[in-house]
Amino acid sequence: MQKDPIQLQRSPNVHEKSPWRFCIAPMLDWTDRHYRYLARLMTRHARLYTEMVTTGALLHGDVSRHLQFNESEHPVALQIGGSNPADLAACAILGVEYGYDEINLNVGCPSDRVQNGSFGACLMATPEIVAEGVRSMREAVDVPVTVKTRVGIDRSDSFEAFSRFIDIVAGQGGCEVFIIHARKAWLDGLSPKENREIPPLRRDFVYRIQDEYPELTFVLNGKLETLPEMQTELAQVPGGIMVGRAAYEHIDWLRFIDQTLFDVEAIVPARSVVVQAYRAYMVEALESGVPMPPLLKPLLTLFNGLPGARAFRRYVSEQGPKRKTDIHVLDEALALIPDPDAADSAELEWRCSSPYIPADKKAG
Image (tube, rainbow, N blue to C red; front, side, top):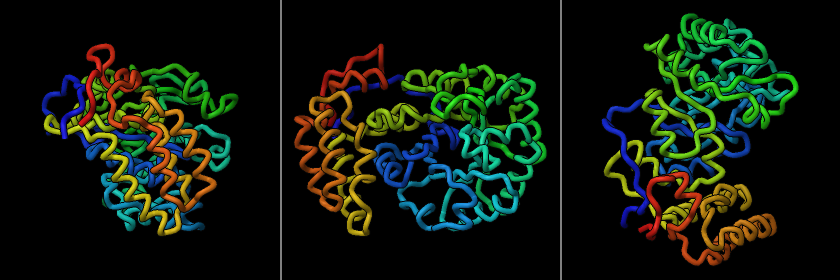
């Protein structure tokens, strides 16, 4: 297999990297086990995160449905939503029993439902509670316990308030790794979608906080869209970066992560190789009773920008719900893509190398 023609300037010292160097964010309705399996076919080194699971769902629901995953997904982290220290500890133990490599506490989600459950971003107002929850989980498990948070909430959005939050959660709770969505959250008046777009980015808060607490690891999250931009930010925030929407709006560029951010010898896997490996996974999942639509969903943006991509998306969206156990839906949809390994996608060029190097050849 040849390397994909899109190449980037690679980072030095690739073998001395933080475990959180590149993370794919926990995203509701997206980062389920099927998405994570497909992502792992593209990158061996990215750190993957589950959708947020509440403590109530784990303590009173179907644990296996929420926590089962494929062994190939490692390293993979479980994100928990909750605030009761005992419940958090019990759920952390469940996560470790199922084999997760990290337990992450959600202190960033601004939705009304989450606020009504007294967890998510509203917990930034009570850092002592966050610290107690983190401490309880750290005492219960031997994997990293991390916190994903914002830089502030509502009008409590000064750097001083943010620094105090970090100081208490690290000092009293023992948290050593913070994933920072570099926007504040408005808890009243903005939807979760608006909270990802309207509050201005404050990446400077992340730069400043890591200078203030050099002994801690900080991971930058917030509107990172292209690999050149990610490389630039990693020079500023060596603890790591986390990518959200870009990782599902156009999943294809994840094929380049290992080559550009981790391993200078990595081969970029061709789309045809990725999709055939995922097809084998789909066959096993269908035989175990998983319906077709959730299996097809992660593939929707794999061919974005290529001839036939729109027809592919339309076909799987229409036929998947009708033929819920028929793997031939995928085969017929793939036939609508004239050349699945073509390298003439303008979006892929932008994600990977724009404005520097054009993509003018085919992937191997």
